Image (cartoon, rainbow, N blue to C red; front, side, top):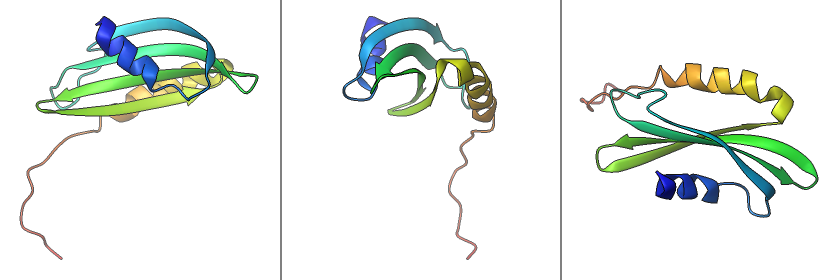
Length: 99
């Protein structure tokens, strides 16, 4: 998981400083039955503190990356909305176009 955490940290904005690793979770949410990994960081950028959660969904031979960022005071609410929205993701096989 160290390699995945390092990949998540590399997604933080260029120029971030005072980076702190806060948490990680494997399969905190599954997306259409696929495994996930998420890591949360706090960092400074242009004198402002921010938190970011980076989530990787392992979709067979593909990797989907999703992230949510907010100020620390607003992060819990943004994170809840972010996680709630993930439950609606699903994949369908392409069928014939109807338009």
